[in-house]
Amino acid sequence: MRCRADTWKLPRRRWEVALAVASDASTGLEAGQSQAEEIMAERNNISDLLAFISREDDWRDRLQEVVAEHLMPALEEFEIGHDGLVDLLGEQWSGVLWGCGFEDFLSCRYEDGNIVDLYLKRRGWKETALNRDYFAALRDTPVSLYEVSDVQPGTSMALRDLLTDADPVTVREKSASRTLKQWDRIAVRVVAERDHHVISGALLPFRAESTEFLYEGLRDALKLKKRDALRLSREQLLGCAPIFTAAWLFTELDRALSPAEIQLSNSDGDDVQFHDLRFPLASGVTQKAVAERLDRVKGFEPEGAKFWNWLSARKGRARKSGGGLMLDTQMDGATVLGTLELKGKALLVNVNSATRAAMIEALVAEACGDLLKRPLTSIRTVEQMGNEHRGLEPQAGADEIPPEVAQQLMQEHLDRHYRETLDARIPALGGKTPRAAVRTAAGRKKVVEWLKYLENGSARHDDGPIAEYDFGWMWKELGLQDLRK
Image 1 (cartoon, rainbow, N blue to C red):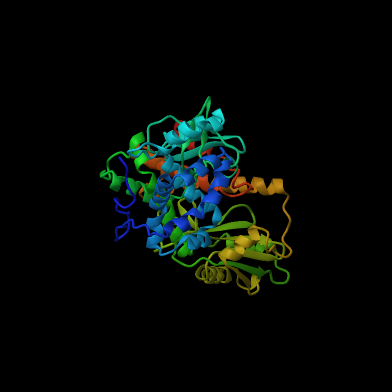
Image 2 (image 1 turned 90 degrees about the vertical axis):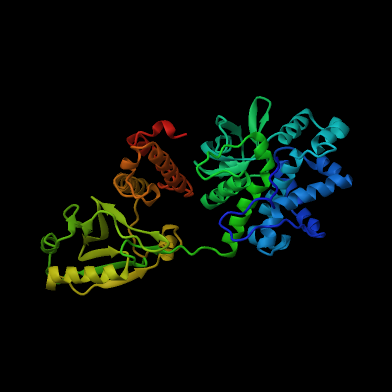
């Protein structure tokens, strides 16, 4: 069967897309061919095959129709042409998308045959044995969605097919293995090449929303119920190839045209703004005198002689704000509202909202009275904090911490944070803690996906201790180490 792009209802849309390729659409679609040829040439030389197709009018028209089948639903819905596609996504992706249609075309079988069979029969003598074998294998290989693991940059990576029951395979790959991370998801064709496997030239990285879009599109096209297992045969995958491209293109164009503004709030629902309050010690006042006052404040939990965590009065599940992301840390089941530290001749206080800044200023003033002078306050946005972490706006006078010490501190912080997370209620787990969720088969499956999400997000940091953090202990502690594959 072949699931044409105009026969499936696009998920989460109020409309249905009708394929209507305009007579002049082929001109714009061909523009992606040169970029695709460069990308696919890294694997095998397809120039003679393309030249052969261009000389055969019927086959050239069929190629353009298949490429249009992959691209036109999204281009028509967003009312953009090829130039608009390049402007939004870049020339590279224009070429990759053309390549998706081209590779699909190689597998298409018409009443008068298949283009690969015809080419090899007429011109195969000009190709190397490796190229002939590759074209034949590509003709019979469907696209599927794969999960990436065991990445060896510049050498290889393991791929697990998420839509079939096939065993994971290790593919030889130089370029993609340098950028892909653990648990990334990609749509690509895995081609058997003599004694090993390689991937085809058209590779699309799938975000979570693209994956959801794809799954719903496949279920709709194959008339599957939501609870039915999404397991496709080779023939079904070959027929549904346009859905993979459309799912990726719809979500990426939507992101490009309407970039989401990430809204960060804390558990009180306040917009995140980092407030740093510096209370100078009054003349003649010692740190010990201030510490004795702070130790008496309910909610100030000491962590050493000069450091306190300001904890919420209530424990349990924090309130969740309406939209966006929630930024807060849990400690012993309570939310950490801020921190206090005696350093030199000052008390340094850090909180993440204006409301909390006003609250803690009042608490400190009531507790310490005339031991402290009025605070000096600096405010930083999330963007400014990000710039500082990237080294774009280093803080004046900041103490330089040796890299090995910084890495150890970050490691200890992450260990403590994720240790607490195992006992925190996680929305993605239905409001259960990871320890509770793994008690059922359905919960274990959710926890595995949650751990992969954490690990993949960490790996996507270009460098530093976050990217290098080893989550293996969490898998082991939850009894899931055998599923980390």
